[in-house]
Image (cartoon, rainbow, N blue to C red; front, top):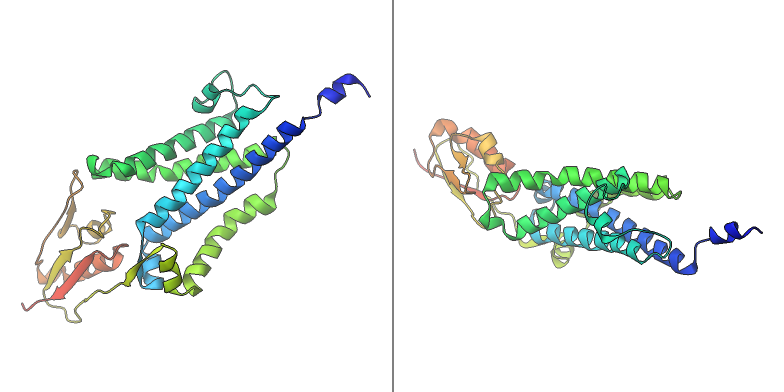
Amino acid sequence: MPPYLLAAVPSAHDSGVRDIATLSGRVAYVTMCLTLVWGVLTATGWIRRVTGHHALRSGHLMLAAFTLASGMLHALTFLFLDDDTLTVLKLLIPFADGGYARHACAIIGFELCVAISVAAGVRRGLAYRGWRHLHQSGYAAVGLLMIHSWFGAIANGHLSVVWLGGITVSVPVVMVTVLRFLPAPKLVGLGLLQADPVTLAVPAGSGIVLVSVDGHRCHRYGMCQAEAPEVFQLQDDRRLLYLRQPESAQTPQVRAAARACPMRAIQLEGATP
């Protein structure tokens, strides 16, 4: 056998490193999908409507933390390869010393996720609209990381539609099924739902209503403003201003805002005209 063929065979060390990189990359992909689906189901209020409980913000943060941790492990693993020239600079800066587009997608997507996580920690110091726009950029980050996963798998010759495509499709299906059929106390025990069930007293009549907003539950998603802009107003400093006693003609819009709130932070009480 010619010598150059022997040199092309990867060492046992590098094979082990690449196995760790592959495993951590798949774990990161799974938790990223879980984080995305949980955030969407929380924001749309689907979890609250199905389980009768509020989704805990800590559940979303926990999934995001697992995603960042496994993604960082995936990236750092390549620094331990003997047969590669990957450097810290190439891990931090897109297209440093050349580089591939799929690597740039991963770097930009991951660093954007880190920025969102840091902003979540100092959220009180940010204007609400700026925070919301940064948080919404997480969808773009997920898209970039998915591009990296698919094209990276193709480039390395181990693309498996069964696990990549299967995970992408099965994660939302499995999560929705679990939320639909697993008893709520189990989900509360896992730290995904609040212990207290949702209670909302909406008057049956069409008279004037009194409005109150729970500041701890309200995450300033702005859905109430979309339903009743004359009653609810989001400010640039993240304050939510609202009319305590709107006019009777605004009652249908106020009720729609209460139903649309994903955190069920809006409480309505009947009042005499």
